[in-house]
Each structure stands twice: as structure tokens, then as C-alpha cells.
Image 1 (tube, helix red, strand yellow):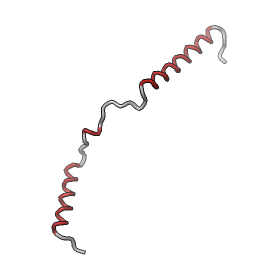
Image 2 (cartoon, helix red, strand yellow):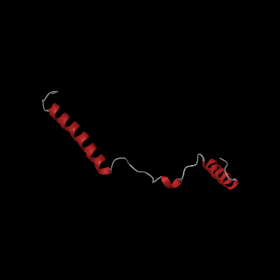
Image 3 (cartoon, helix red, strand yellow):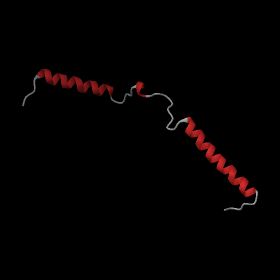
Image 4 (cartoon, rainbow, N blue to C red):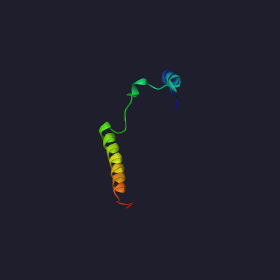
Length: 67
């Protein structure tokens, strides 16, 4: 199974092209600052956490106890 010289040269050129690209990252893949959750969901989460803690503080202050 011998390969032709033209095919071998094409494979070598393709290999050399990949070697020169090694380690470089294309800048078009980054979109910028993309958050994993939306701002509405984040605001709702903060609202629930702060609201529940305020409710707990008010409940303890009025004599509701720990439970």
C-alpha cells in the first residue's frame, strides 16, 4: 500500500497547518459576559432569601421562639 507523493504532500501540509494553530483560541467563540442564570431569577432568589430571613427575625422578636 503505497501512497502517491501528491497525497502524502497534502497530508503533510494539513499536519503543518494544525501545528501552527496549536494553542491559539479563536476570539469569535466568546460572546462576552453571559450569566448562567437570568437577572429575574437572581432577583427572585435574593427576594426569597432576604424575605425569609426578615420574616424569621420578626417572628423571633415577637416571641415566636426558635421553632
